[in-house]
Image 1 (cartoon, rainbow, N blue to C red):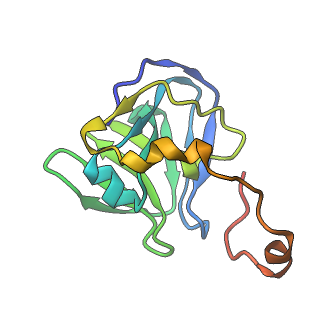
Image 2 (tube, helix red, strand yellow):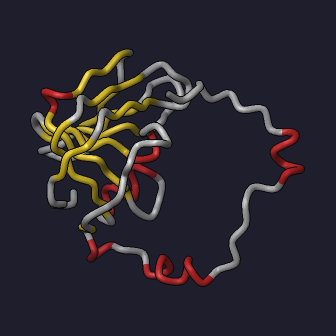
Length: 149
């Protein structure tokens, strides 16, 4: 859970892969950060969790996310149908996974937390060869994901 500085954000929309759970966040103050803690690594199946933090009063959720108490203070929300991790909720504060936000949302992390668990290999990523998705692969893949906002 980063402690990023707050700034004003536009409306945010997003949801899970299958479309069963959608959310909207009204415009206003929020924070964007990256958490490297071991709990976030395990919850996302990734090296870190990019999180958009907002007060719950501005959040509208449609569909029924499943929740699991990952600690004594927080629950993790996810889609029970497709398994997409959606948010971390502590009290009335939501931290939405950035990958679930619509692609045009201006997510730009301002802070990193949980550095004691940061994976050392992350430093080498920018030096690796990089490429777009192979056209031959794009030609045969049929996505079952819902349309994004």
